[in-house]
Length: 469
Ligand code: SAH
Ligand code: SF4
Ligand code: F3S
Image 1: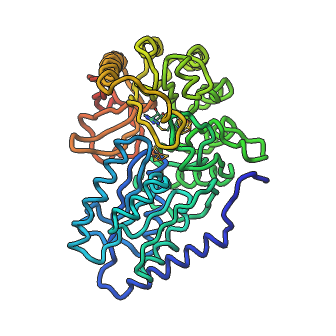
Image 2: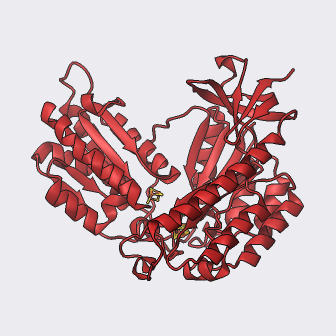
Image 3: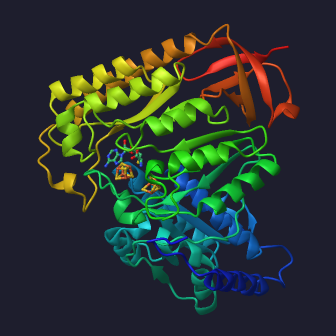
């Protein structure tokens, strides 16, 4: 198979494993293993990257802790999507000065999307001198080599050079769950929505070999995973850089043909590339969950054009119709941005009517946040924060009403749910469409099983139910 994107040669990955062994040897004389604390911000892609970091750390002989205070290495895997996310990370990095003072040998590492931004890397270099290691997503596979450099030379290491990115196969992984798993199918983004930082920090779109992906899914199913999410910034672009003739719907259908009792999900679909072929596969494969996360971002075609989304309100709505014709009870969720530069009240109203027209089960709502280096950041933005917040609150209130109504319709029905864990309130499960169900009754032995659940009540966030006979 030919690809137009770069794959890291296996020999270089093997070399990283040797660095892991060298690091392990450094602490082999200690009475107990050194501890690592990995703190993850941002999207599922970052969660998946943290599972690779933990895989590498385990191979280096590290144990794990949730407490930065007792860790020998603290890693912040960061997100750059909005200002607020960045401020939170910088606040937490700052607070580690005190932790490190109490624990002088501690190593502090900042990686992920923020680290790939030049102005952030410079700030970390100049104003956060307690940070030892900084690397962007492109250097993730070289983490063992970079950490070894810090450990053996006791100097600071920054690896944030620009790159289009590559594919690194064969890294060790330590998964956080036993029921649900992430599988990255592609990395990067070529869409350059005018507000978004992701294409700048994650590089160009590149797809993993379909056989590698299918093999990973087979292994997960054999290991007992029941809910598998295929990840990419725009999964519908999958395969464009490969010349094997496999696109995303083909991959999804091949994955759904793997034997076993499991559900497949995927995130995220860009509306411009989601179409009938995908919807047909979703409709005919029972293992593909009846859920689509289809971010619309704005209900106004003028704003969508300024966002460089490359679809109109009408095109978006007609895709939703095409999908609903095939799967009438599809669960739809979405992302939306309020207060894009120049958005008028009239345009905001179009967003409001769009969510009423579609009737999403849940919505992730964001206030526009200017990102340095993106085209939207230099557009005139005359509206005040208060004006944007007022619109934002109206949107959230309207969606709360819709979600509450959607959830109420489940009451009295029986759903085949996957029991996925427990929290402080008890056992949790998910409907096929991924709505949260709190179980009354049942015990831990149900975790990891599909169970028929009678839904007894609901609110705007979740459903409550009991195992049905
Ligand atoms: N690749 C995904 C989105 C990843 S970012 C997609 O295209 O759908 C997740 C969400 O964050 C986006 O859908 C968008 O709604 C929001 N977002 C991205 N950049 C933003 C910004 N600068 N300000 C506010 N919200 C933003
Ligand atoms: Fe960002 Fe757009 Fe790419 Fe999504 S598709 S990651 S919003 S540039
Ligand atoms: Fe954030 Fe990077 Fe994901 S910017 S949303 S962690 S791709």
